[in-house]
Length: 266
Figure 1 (cartoon, helix red, strand yellow):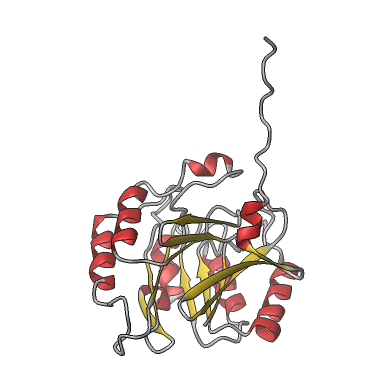
Figure 2 (cartoon, one colour):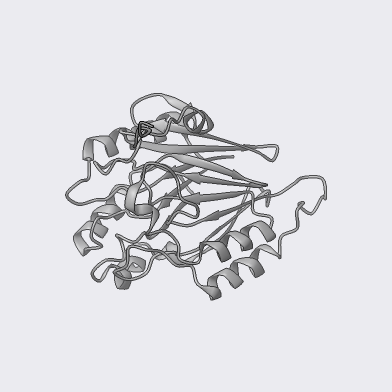
C-alpha cells in the first residue's frame, strides 16, 4: 500500500500555485497512491475563500481515497465553524485499507484561534477504545496489522523549528502513552514544516514539510512524504516537489545541528 502525505499548503498569501500544480501532476502520473492524507493547514487563515480554493485544488488529485483534517491555521477566525462544510469527510475518523491489514484513525488536534494543539481526554479514550477493537493480526491470524494515527500538530519536538517547538500538543504525553499502549506503528504529523522522523520503540513518528508554501523550516524545498507499506514493513521517503526522492531516515542521519555558541576561552 502506498500513502502520500501532503501537509501545510497554506493557501493564502504564501501559497505557491506552481509548486502545487507540479505536485498534483507527479502524484497523479508517477506515484498513483492508494491513499492521500492532507495533514492540516490547508489554508493560512481559515477564511471562506481560502477553504473553497483548498476544496477545488484537492479535487485535482486522481485518488479514490483522500483523507483531510484541519490544522491550527484552518481553525482561525471562523474556520473551525465551517471547515466541515467544505470537507464533510473530515468527520469520519476510522478507516480500513488493504483488506484490514492497515487501520488508520485521525484525531483533531486543532483548537479555535489557538496555535497550540490539544487532543483531549475524550479523543484519547476514543482512540484507545477504537484501536483495541483491532487485534495485532488480521482474522487469518497470519498477517500482522499496521496501525496508523494521524494528527496535525507535532507529537515530539524536532530540531530547527524554533518557537513552534512550544506550540505543539499540550497533552502530548498522554497521547504518546495511548499510542504506545494501543500498538500504534506509525504516527503521521504536519505543522512543523520540517521533514523528520523519530523511532520510539515500535512507534515511527513521521513529519511532513510544507508542500507548496514559502513557510520553510530546516529544509528549503517544497516536500511531501511517500509512505510505502509492504509485508508489515513501513518505508518513508521525502519527495521534493519536482525533484528527487530521499529516504526520510537519511535526512535525519545527515542532520548536523547548527553551532550556536563557541567555547569560552579558559
